[in-house]
Image (cartoon, rainbow, N blue to C red):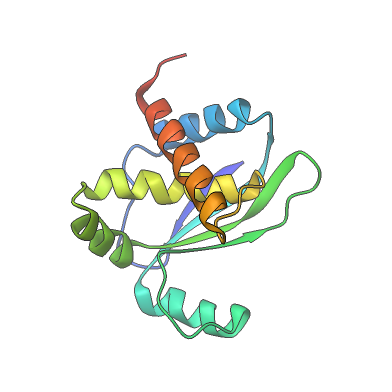
Length: 139
């Protein structure tokens, strides 16, 4: 089950559309849907998680905790909507496009994609672009 939660005043519109899109992403990666939770929050909330659980004292747009078992994806994906808005301005894209990128990014981590090396980051970006294009594709 794909769930969306809020720890700030952000409310994701068209949740069923996002759920259907994420299910298409899972199918395209030959993965199965487990319990996947997206938690939208502000910078301070995510910073506190970053410090407490990852020992990183910096701000980020996303933190994912992967509890995948085999091919069934499970986990929690925390997204700072403040950071997404700032990055959208920085990269000159809409908030919605940047949000889709970050939402896909978290799920792609659960699918096994990394982004620490330059090569891995390039593959991750290509996969994000591929998955974002799937958002409006009807099946």
